[in-house]
Image 1 (spheres, helix red, strand yellow):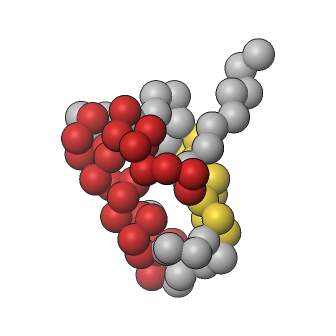
Image 2 (cartoon, rainbow, N blue to C red):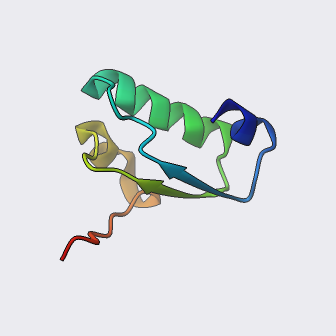
Amino acid sequence: MARALATRPDVLLIDEPTTGLDTRTAARVLAAVRRRLPRAVLVLALHEVPAAVETWGWAWSRARLDR
């Protein structure tokens, strides 16, 4: 992920970036990615969305693909 963030892409696809992290750390990781790439389109594949994401406003949306 560090290499991807270093290139500052316009679009970043990340698969399970918070797996194995506690809720607080997961939220901090996602916030750090957003701070590093404030205008990028982020597509995250997550099994569990950290609760704190809900408070980050319109910049985050979800789509369920399991149905």
